[in-house]
Each structure stands twice: as C-alpha cells, then as structure tokens.
Length: 276
Image (cartoon, rainbow, N blue to C red; front, top):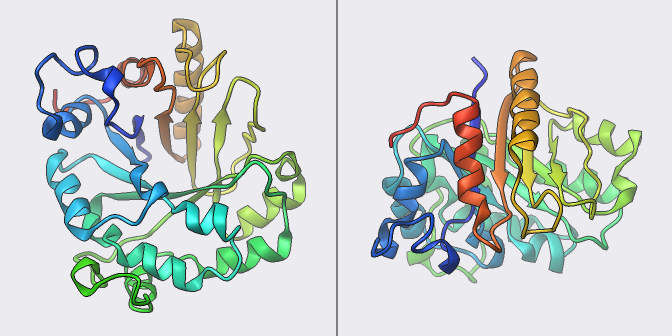
C-alpha cells in the first residue's frame, strides 16, 4: 500500500534549538526528537563527506523502527566528478555505512549542480552503475579503494531490499521529454523541487515513487509555507498516493527554522501516525 514519508533535510541546526527543539534538549537526542514527530528524515551530511558505518548505525538506532532515512549522495560524485568515472567513488559511498540502515534505508538522492546540463550518454552510464537492491549495493561496495580504512567499511547488509534513486537536477535542460524518458527508462524519480522559482520544478512521474524537496515558498531556504500552500501540497500527496505512488517530502527551508514546523504541519494534514 502506498505510504507518505514526510520529514526534513538534516536535523542539526542551531536555530532549531530552543524553538523546535525544547530548550536544554541534548544534541544527541535531536534526531530522535525530530523523527518521533515525522515519518522520515533525509540524511544530508553524507553529501559533504563520507560518513562512518557507526554513524549510520547510530542514526538507525536513534529513530523509531517505522521511520525511514533517505540518504543524500556525495557531492564528490555529483559536483566534483560531475558523474564521470564514478564507479569507485560510488563503491566508496555505499561502503561508507549506508547499508547499516538496513530495512530503514529510504531513497538515495542525487542532487546535481546548477551548471550541469542534461547529457544523455553521461546520465545513462551513471544510471547503469546505480545499485537497485541492497545486495547489489553490497557487491558494489566491495569494490571500494583504500581511501576508506578497513574500520570504516561495511560491505554486507542484513536485509535484501530494493534501493530507490531520485535525481534533483538544477539545469533547465532537464525540463525535456528526453530527460524524463531517460529517467523513466531507468526508474529514477525526478525530484519535484519547490525553490521560490530558482530551479525547474519537474512534476512528471518517472518512477513508482515521488520525491519532493521544499526549499522555500517565496524565499529560497528561508521562507515558510502558508496554510493554504500546505493544504495544496497535502492534496497533491493524496493524489499521488491514490495513483499508487509512495511519496517522500522533505523540507529544506531551514535557514530561519521553518522546516521542522512545516514538516509537522504536513504530517498532520495527511493524518500520518507518529511516535510522539
């Protein structure tokens, strides 16, 4: 049965302390506090650097068992390598602990830089490398190089499960039938990005799930969402669920602390049960 996964992108923000997070809440409990009030969290520290298996295991242990953790792919792959010659970097990424999330692993998000235009050949090679199950991810991870010391490697998984992928391009050339068809051919979801008009929105379905990132309604990363806007997003999510799609929505308007409050408001509109 289709399910809605609603949450935030990241959880460790100073401006949330004493606001969304109660004053005096230990930082080590912030992830738990957020996850108890939502149904999913997007891990974004993995975008900036390779994490550790112990970190992924700790994050999994910190959230309720019915909360899934989406993982943002590394910028070394998307921004520095621009998706070229990335088989070993992909192996390193999946060997760095992603598999420790087990059955709570959500989609892997690949955010592209704004300068990167659509290139069919490059995208096809990248999509062909992506693992589509935890077993495939484990086999890919086994090809990691020595940049990862042995005490920071995990190449096994405790569950065989599908691995979904979402692509967030930020160049207008992806707003094309060719790009949508290529993503659909490989079952990669095109992210619906709400960015105060900065980047293409791309609402068409290209996979069996929808992935939404809400970066700010009127001001990028900074503005909150009105009641009317959240009502519209809730209606859109219901439509997608009725179509048989799982829905992932992550609020990234964290600059002024709106993200967690908006996420909780959308959770309530959709009538989702949480641990809080």
